[in-house]
Length: 147
Image 1: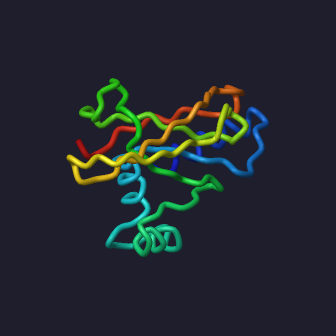
Image 2: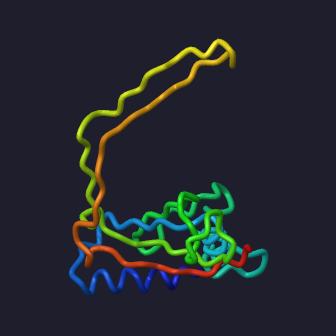
């Protein structure tokens, strides 16, 4: 993955009149590795500000005004979990693209299990998620160099 995929997604969103503020991207850590390594190197760095920040903090931060988040909470493009192909789908989207409805607050209970010599913590939630506006998001698929 390169930063150009993020730029392409932003261009598609802006062509659909999606507000340019508060855009977010979610990508797999193996794809994030390729993005980070493309912005940093040990030779002449074409992106010294961004690259140096990545080397210092290991956080991608923002590219083209897009907040970059990485999570392993996704399967690869062939729906393998854990991924084995190295191809991962991510997304660049405006918050208006997605919706979350909470029917009740998160309930947390503890239960003592003497045989384990431990306390179990149980959390329950009743919620629903949905895509609200298809034009406010853009799929990004990238092949990771890590297999």
